[in-house]
Image (cartoon, rainbow over all chains, first blue to last red; front, side, top):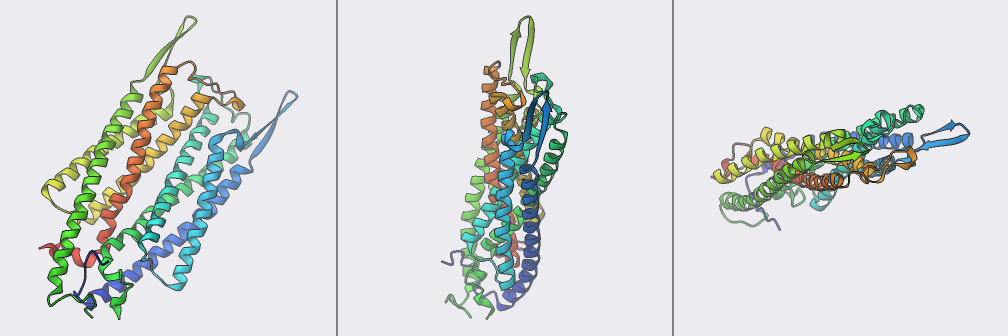
Length: 206
Length: 206
């Protein structure tokens, strides 16, 4: 069980000292995590709404053409990714807030692994969605003359601007997710160092 | 107090026991890391060469048109990203091999932070490059009828296939980089758990 077999007696002093420092660090990390998750949630909703509600109608001779985000798969993917990121961040922010109020510290390795994996996956998915959408946006804005792909932002200026705002917001979501990676990695992997002391549920401080 | 019921001099036993298991874990992690880095290096070079050397000439009436990777910014970005990933992985693999041969364990926090940050950055850059290139490849393969962007893979079939192979290789590079993230996170953040014991210069293993 206590497979690392650490920290049997090197002392109550060490444990208590360590516990104090650990609590301060814990609180700081938790506050950073909570703030980041709330900001990500808000930006994710903002990006999804900006892109998802964007549309512009253009009349070409007698034909009405409406530009909307479903015309481009990358934007659909981006809206979905932002929606998932926002929901995920909301749930994580709630978990974070609850554990701050109750004052308990994360000692469960499976839960820490789940949070770390979830954060990593969300960071990769969000950044990949942003990259794909940014690539599409570049084609839409500049065209690709070598391939005879024409610019479309000249025609749908207002539409493109709003997509740009949504994209900027999504970039921040991706960066926020990337910033969370070390936070959840810290929460997980220090458990592998502290195993002996804290694995027992902090029983050493009695 | 001595709740684990270990004998008179628990300190020595525990430390020695811990040292042994830690070494086993260390060795395994190091082997996984070395293998992953070598594979990534090889795949990165492969992808860069496949895409960078790809070209196809097509004669349209009397005009010769040559398709090459510089026609598409996303492919240029992908070649560069793969080149950087391969070089970075080579350097890291050498570091890994040297420390395996010399048998020393990573206890320097700044170095561990540098490796962790580097790995994270490489994972994000590679995956973003892959996503952008994949988006371009989808446009090239399927076109975007709503925007009158035509397929170009019908014209440049051989060229597109080779890009596809390079892209597949790049996807593996990205996944490999993502798989390295927990390895370097483990190497870094367990230092924060073992602080009391090993922070003093690894005196415990003697």
